[in-house]
Image (tube, rainbow, N blue to C red; front, side):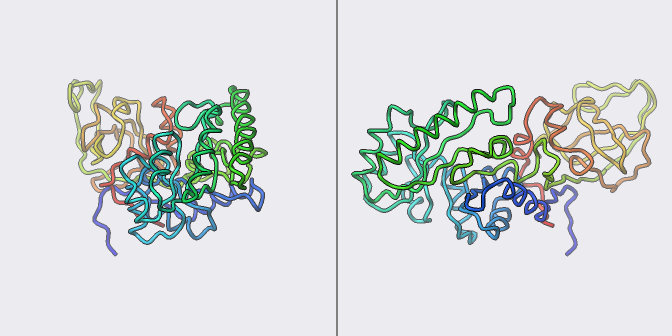
Length: 358
């Protein structure tokens, strides 16, 4: 089928499978895997990614809120879907679409204890990140409530590592891991039920695999944007040149006249802008693109739907393809130039960009 879109995010599902299998190779055969597909599967398209990993013998899918879960259910996803932040208003939807929930505070616990319909529950503990989760001193009262609410089917207990990717903060991570190990065992004892225990994320599996316990959650690692040579970034953002022109010395480019040509130049326009998720801080030489294997600098300020590049040294024509990121220019390197993380670049990609799955 002919494609009419000028800007396309190509997503390679074979690379996704490769990354999944790489993480699997780091784990015991019995260790279960949750695939994290929140935020539109980190910008890659949650339905297609979920349906691809569903075939790989996973424990379930991890989403942020009930709406993400409902979208997947309506699309035909049958796997377990765990909602990390169910909120207090989504009870009916959680039940209707057979979604699991994470309970992390007393408000949610009271709500779900008071309703008498069966729900699958995962309990979150705070081990030092201080975001979501019960503190260790709350465990006794939480277990009492759960023990008197047989309609709540507690399946697992979990926590989240704050800095598993930072070797220099290893002591903090080890402290989190030890704390979770002891508190989760105490929790299991008080609830008198064997529970799945999970705390490792992608970096956790790579750096602390001996703490894998019963289950792990793989997010950014699935999409391949980590500092690890075994992982393959699964996507590339390709656009085209929509106009070329010659400008003279002293001519300006873009809004605010932030770029002034210091010589005669050939420039080209690309139809991607900050509305598509291209960070405006890549303006004026911070950002680069690849054309025919050559690096070309972004010049002037990135607009809502376009940016300009210096193509003086490259043979280009209108309609020619350019790589915003991909095999030649990694999201990891772009993130570093912006002092941010690949997660932000992926998850801010606008859904209006056409996704094509390979």
